[in-house]
Image (cartoon, rainbow, N blue to C red; front, side):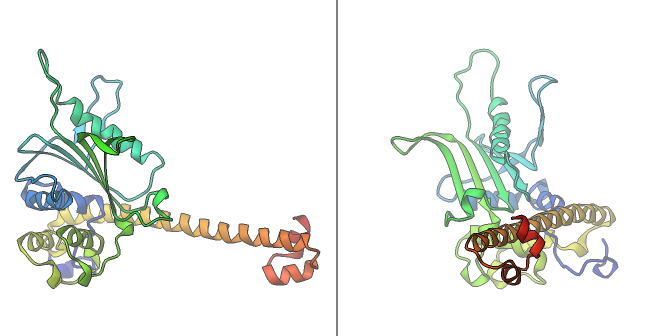
Length: 289
């Protein structure tokens, strides 16, 4: 083990949103109690997961030409239910398509040779998202989405064995004193752990004790520390790229609005020098509008 003083980290705990952090918490058999508790928090009232077996996270198509899929975490419960659990930090245009595509692998692998009645075990595709879906940016749709096949006329679930759960961490803003459910506590920990210097009193219990112990950087050996450093660098690169894109988009939006106002003032006959003073645009730019 490495002493915390031997590392360059000022944080006590890992960032769970990094690839290394997410898989350390949820993707190792030693910590499967954490995964089970998290799944039960997500599925409260729907089903109880008592145990899981980790399955191969790399799935291949039925022939060499077909694309493969690599899941962050893939496991099977005692009753045969399959769970794909994915961490996604950046919005992708076809993210929903990808999550649907991923779900086809645990469905297809249940096929049996010979006589088979096509009975399937439930499949859950779970996305922990460090972004907000575009359609949610201007709404109060909340943090948690559970999607099933539904009859659009009756508004009733048509098929309940294929479920997509999306958790938008970017929409989760509860503070410690507002945490009521186990899922609240998990989401707070996932979003804020790297900024904490001790386990809060609100996150007590055996599971959260194991979570914070697993996440403590001072307990890492040399290889673990190196792998976490690489994963943290990749995460920072992604976040910096996202922040830069947002800032550029904000600036572009401001400039577009400024030009629009300048055009309106010019059409109203306001003097060019006055428009320049109001908008900050040069008189040459205004003349070209």
